[in-house]
Image 1 (cartoon, rainbow, N blue to C red):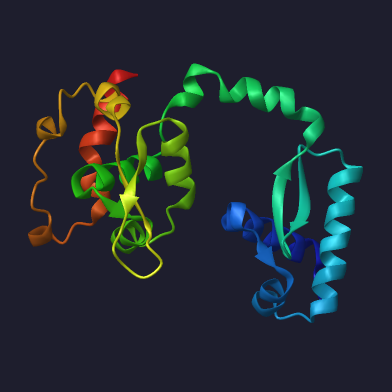
Image 2 (cartoon, helix red, strand yellow):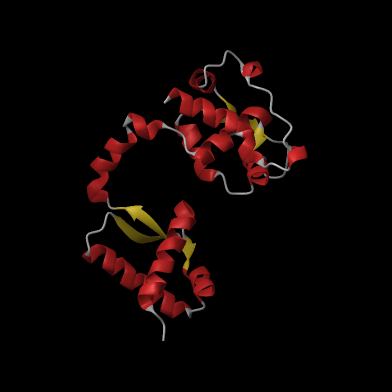
Length: 194
C-alpha cells in the first residue's frame, strides 16, 4: 500500500531541490517508482491541496516540468521582501560563485559549474541582478558561451580599488580543500560588513 502523504512529502522536497528548473512527470515517476499516470494524478491532487489550503506556494506545470511558485495575489509582500536591506545579502552559493568569477574571469557558466560541482544558474542570475557580475564577451568555443566577469559595483561592494587588491588565494590543494574555502575571504568580508 502506497502512503500518499509520504509521497506528497517526498515530492515537496524534490520540487524544492529542483528549484526554478522544475522536475518532469516522467522523472518523478522514475524516482518514485510509479507509473506516469499515477504521478500526474498525485500532482493534480497536490495542486488542489495547495489551492484549498490557501498556501503561500502553488505547484504549476511550466514547459512540461512541475515547480513551486509563489501565489500572484501575494506579490506585493514578496516585493517588499526583495527591497528590504537584510534581503540584500548574498547567499553562500552566490558568494562562492562570485569568488570563482573574481579570480578566474573571464569564465563561462560551464567552467564555473565544473569548479563548484553544482549548477550555478540561479547564483549567476542573482549576481547579475545585483550588478556584481556582467557578461564580458563570448568564448571561442562551440556554441560561443557567455563569459562572465566582475563589475565596478563588485569592487565597491568589497571595498577594493582594483582586482589587484583581491587577497591571494591560499593553496588549498595540498590540504585537499574544495572551492568553498576559496570563497571564505568574500564570505568573511560580507559578514564583517553586516
